[in-house]
Image (cartoon, rainbow, N blue to C red; front, side, top):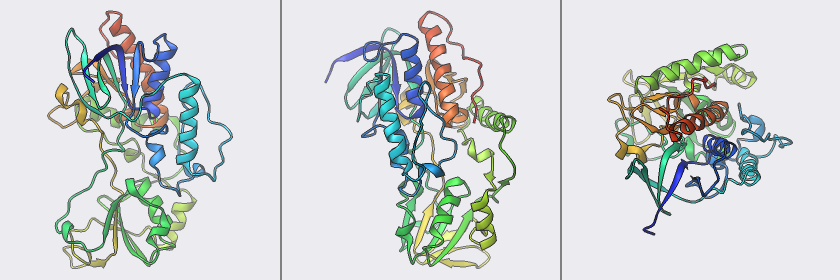
Length: 365
């Protein structure tokens, strides 16, 4: 397909951030397909949620904030979150007529002609005046490299492909990572595995007491400062610490959450430290997080020397036509909602001939 279709805005991604942006576009008078298009590479609605492991039930989900304009009600907490949230996103798209195109792979965003961008995809080309990038992180799992990694005779997998705890029955498992996923996986696997070992790069920080609005603002400010400086964003969760809930307390009491520092090398039989400690393993599970999926923006040369994209509000400082939502300080469900609204406000001003200066409303964790 050689035709290039002109629209006002292209939204890339139909997870929480992308749908929030599309909702606010629709609410402010932009018509789907005529004025804006939403492109999503996933096979169905649900964003990254549709790929979550089966044992992550809706009742275990932390901080799933409703999309703007439509609450998620009556969900069975015992059902898989992948099913509950995929159905909710599907109903949301239909309720607001967002007409998401999928599966569509966005290959590159380039400078177009006449002040427009050029979005090249597996389904053709679009030429928007502005872009909302909401591609999240799920497609870029981070795999640290350690000496000897290629010699390991067991199985290595990333949390993005975590199959559930039963798959580790009778196995000796090393879980690498000090975030929420690492601890959740470890606590699930321990009753099934022959042995578990928890390894983290830094000592884990456990947070007692409620996570109130002030703490949320402080956490977001730390992440926001990094993206303002053009550094790769850290997740909001990485600066909040792990909540010391009943499950964590039990894991600490049982010794499941006895943490070891990062090992120095991987051997065919397991992992080793320079002090001579060894742990034999059948599986290494890397719960080491994700990186922003923004390679398609490379032709626009938005990255700073620090490796990240410097943003002000949601606007890329290097190009006011491009907004990143669900990136850095807005990489949470409530933050994505607010970022989607802020991006649309700024884009509205830009398309009306304004400066496109960012909306100053803060996002939240």
